[in-house]
Length: 505
Image (cartoon, rainbow, N blue to C red):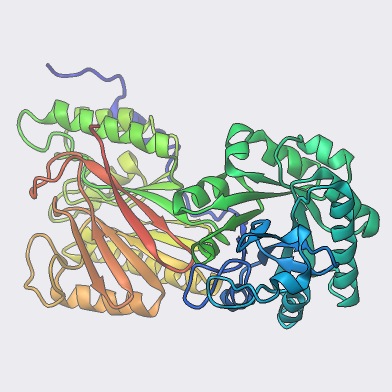
């Protein structure tokens, strides 16, 4: 049965309110990374070792966290646990433990050892966790000793403090009122932390998940927010989206990728409603399921790689497309498909496309990335005026991106090639001379990714620094892949994840 939709074609002019425009929002601030017990999960290193500090300094993280205890004779040493080789540190003399070794063979470091190395790289903060000793007297004595050594080294601005004991935090502020002191235990609200004059909360990820409002509350009060201990990329992205300031992680190399926001793009290929006789209802359903999945994932933008409908003269199909697309809660950037325009392209066909779907050349700027959507049909056969117009737009967009220092992602319907650069011209690729010229030009202009549709097959190809990605469709996949789309996550160092998201699960 033919579905009824109440959107006439005439409303195409005003229906694209969620369509991406050529505007730039401010780059979102990412998180700073703290290496948990130093950068220990690497060759030659160990937790709370001087080597772990050196590795963290070489990595260039914000800070290196470490744990301290004090012996009975007043020596402050580094170790996470209160016991080393069966000896309780706070009940032992320094002589009893000084030759105990860490996992990398390094002898248990003293605080002075750590400060000496830390001072060599002052831009890397030292995040000192004062462990909770068995008595208040021992806690206070340890605090006093630590503050004295830090002060003697002239490193008050480089060393920041954290503790599970609120009494330790208070004592730190009593001895050094301008110290950066954050509380670890998670049982105080941000307002309570502010009232005690601490400078931040430093809570376990479970606490922040239970109280995500703590992030905004802390920031409103002028408090910093750190979250520990993050190990996976998914956790880091989750906390990044919440807006925390710092993460403490066992994987600081990964954490550094979140110093700026990764950009997330839903690559949606060829909805092509009415692809074949009898498939219209299924095509529409799969498209609508994909839209629901996209809304749940909340990417930064949807890159719709063309062929919105199978027959550009089918007003009902266009109306249904807009009805479903209108449910998207994130911006969309379009590119024309060969089924969205007459073949060969005509001025009248371009006018109709622009009324129905918006301009056939678009740009959008997100967090240091410029996405350029170009009309690949104009690189085949088209009116000269249209070709010239796009060439000027493309050059202007590439020049603007270069001036801003932006990385560039291209979006077209037709990919440059399917298997190899030198392949013969055919339906699924761009003409050889055109593709070679564009690829070289894009390499020279900072393009890192080229997203495309059209092939109804999933492909990943590379040309120099450019990865060319053809994802699954929601209409038909010739390689029998499931219906769905790709969630592309682009990191500041140009690495990317390209995850398949099924529409029908």
